[in-house]
Each structure stands twice: as C-alpha cells, then as structure tokens.
Length: 220
Image (cartoon, rainbow, N blue to C red; front, side, top):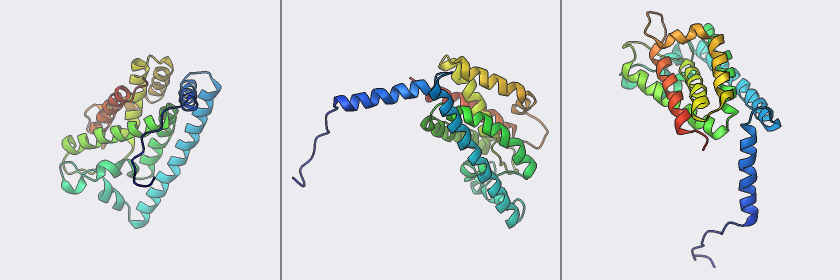
C-alpha cells in the first residue's frame, strides 16, 4: 500500500548469478591474453582517442578568444585565490600546439591501459591524481606563474601503472609502464627541480598521486 515502508528485496539466485558473472567478466578483462582483455583494451583505446579532439577543440577556442585567454582564466596560479579553480580546469588547457602535441600521444597510451583496468577505477583514479597534483601545485608551485597542461595526469598514470604492477602483483601493468617509461625516459627527469619553463612540481605530485591511486583503488 502507498505510504508503507518497503523492506529491501532479498537477494535471489538470479541476483547472485548476475553478480558472479559480472565479477568473472571483470576478472577476465584484467587477465592478459584473454578475449575480454583485448576487447577491453580496444574500447579503452577508442575512448582515449576520442578525448584528444576535445583537447584540440579547447585549444582552438583559446586561440579564437586570444592566445592564453583560457589558460589565464582556468590555469593554476599558485597561492592565489583566483587560480584555485585551475585544480579542476588546468589539465584540459595547454600552452600552444606544441605543448598539446607533446602530451597527446603519452596521454592516449597510458590512459588506454589505465582505462582498460575498469572505467570506475579510471575515473576515480584520475580525480585523485588531479586533486593531488593540482592542490600540490597550488601550494608549492612557483609564484607568479600560470600552470596548465595534462602532464601531471600523464605522470600520474605512469605512477599508477608502476604501482599497480607491484600492489596487484600484475607483471603486465608493470611491463607496460616500464616500456612507456623507456620510450619517454628523457621526460622522467622532469620530476626534478629545473630552470626550464615546466612545472616539475606538477609532474612529481602527479606521479605520487598515481601511486596513491593504485593503492586506494586496487583490485581486491
């Protein structure tokens, strides 16, 4: 009758079977060499490829408004109240085409393997990495600068895959991160203090954020 509280419906055999099947599919998708694994990897690659045009569109809009307009409005300005919203927006902004080109390929590669581990884990891991890198840069970044770019997230994905390989005892994740690390070994030095026009703080904190995400959102 309307107005009467309803007790939760007890689990049925069908419910338990569905949960078991869902867990089994998830396990298969995370196991190297299975058909589900390759299917998950393919879907993740297509998804990450779809993200890049969105970043290019944002850069087109920025140039149309006047180069650097969106960067100044949505970038992180360390220890400035006006730049605190950049914690959310800065990963989607880039300082010109060269900056965006440099981030596009590693973002697709690393993002694909992180996303293949599960959409929910990917989303929450990305949020955590953005928060750790963004808040950290806001506190310890160089004053008077505007920090933009997805490199903090990229380093976060690298740290996540490396740590996931250890935490989940997955040689596959560790091998992928090591291989991509070898491809971009020269970029790894960007987590150290430098006089170059880059935010080494964002790179280092992104890497640490990825390690934390691998532990917090590890597969049980």
